[in-house]
Amino acid sequence: MAHRWTNTLTHADVTPRVAFLNRRQVMAGLAGVGLAGLARPAAAQEALEPNTWEEITSYNNYYEFGTGKGDPAENAHRLTTDPWTVKIDGMVDKPGDYGFDDILKGQALEQRIYRFRCVEAWSMVVPWVGFELGDLLKRVGVQSGAKYVAFETLVRPSEMIGQKRNVLDWPYREGLTLNEAMHPLTLMSTGIYDEPLPNQNGAPIRLVVPWKYGFKSIKSIVRITLTDKQPPISWELANPREYGFFSNVNPNVDHPRWSQATERKIGGGLFAKRVPTAMFNGYEKEVASLYKGMDLTKNF
Image (tube, rainbow, N blue to C red; front, top):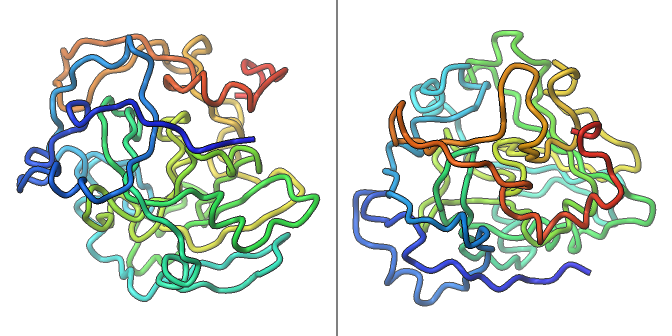
């Protein structure tokens, strides 16, 4: 049975808010906020140079706003995020169209700060504001026989200009096994520090699965579906040779076009030191049991 984890990261590990937001330190603001999350293994907890807010919000993968890393920051301001509705359907007891405020307030979900390293395949520690996806699923009632959770991103080409191109088959789709979705590290994020999510980072609500790097990081979610069948996901549909359903971080298996054995911190420059990539992005102890008996070279 999954349980809440004891965080062993200290404030020294977190990117200082003075650098992240170019404002006051986050330390005082954290005093009254419940903290959760997991540390990387001790070897991976080297001192991290702080990343700036600009670095985090200007280097994004969000094809709905363009394929370049800087395109989302340039184009995402067009997106209207209020009002916002998320449809929850499929094998649930309480299907419906839930307004953003209904999700947060009506469902009485506990929002906390979670500190994770290597968000979006970047070597940094960022406090996400959000709640456990499992808490939401429990509140809507998961029916017997459900095995997977499917997600869809908004389709609005008038504001999401990347959707005017056939880069992918819109809407963007993602999926998890039910066990992955119910794990306490799997989050629905609504902010960074105590700021709402910037549009280019997935406003107003997105998925964060820290052991899967930038994979499974679907943004601006408008639909969550419980199903007994493995759902199609966008990158597997687009290129099944290179992308599979599970998308775990396995440094021992190269991507067909590049090695995944090492990683480099964003903001450190072209010649920044590369460090070994850890299995499951360093969360092997916490999540490896989800894949017991599975061949992770075939189920990539």
